[in-house]
Image: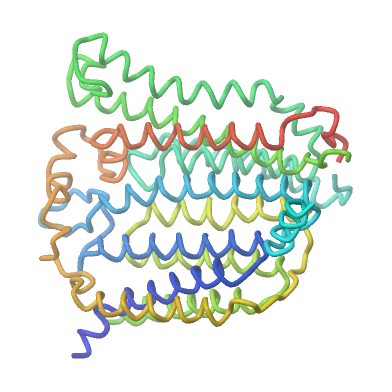
Length: 123
Length: 141
Length: 181
């Protein structure tokens, strides 16, 4: 039973982190904070993939030269490796958009931007 | 721009080794942890440190915006070009076995080449991102 | 057993950082906490045998992405205006989705189980054949560059495109650029 809880403990933390990220994205109006929320969400997915790739008693997937060495699964590592770098590229694009929004509206609070738009429509 | 002499001297000492470490990570990626993605970021970090301490203008003297863009484009073209070479020799796109007399050797050369392409692109993009964010002032409205 | 506890402690630390990041009204400290969060997740990746991923996360997530955030924060307000108009709605959504996911997690394989479906598919093929196919010891590089070369080409183009996108968004109007700073 103890092993049962410990064996899926990582998944639960992943779920908590994922929901924390989602909570920030839904409830906060500050756009930079939303980006941080997305980053937290993203990292929780990375953690989930890497947890799946782990093999009990295995070692890092770099060939040691000894026979009968147990290696963790390299495939999730490859997928996540590229995802991290693409993640920072998309974060940069999002921040660039936020800078443009700040330039146009003078604020980065989402509700204020929304009220700007409705005022323009009602004119 | 920072006038603190300690920071300036330490930066001068440390930028070289950072870029050297980036190159080590780049070309040792087949044997240990590392590869194009990490190496690109580390090399870019070396240049970013230089720009942070000596100012963006000095940083652009080191790598001008034009050269920065060329580096970005060259990386993608190198990656795609290796694929075209294998097409030319009647194999599948990005099959590196044809690059040398022996399939295993060819694979090794192919991996080194495309990792270098990835490294160039990542380093170029990260450097240009930093410069764009730091030098942006906003439209004067 | 010890590695389970180390792992458990580190992921607990991650959760604490994430929750503090929600609480803080200073956007700047949220950004710095995001950097710390990335660094701790890099340590977790090492303990889960993903050395290449940990390397990337430490360099990119903790290093460069924090630098980009700070560079952008130069132009943005440092504090957020707290409006709690849909906190309750968000809490309900997160709790419901979270409970559903916890329910689903009981069907997932135990962490480290060598018989899990993920270890039966192409993973063993890569582990046994990388040495004979390309003769390099780092399996991650082998899979990344050769077996899944198309993926990596796509990712490289995505990064390139993101760089071009930021160049289009922030790079126009050369006269507006502050070159002396």
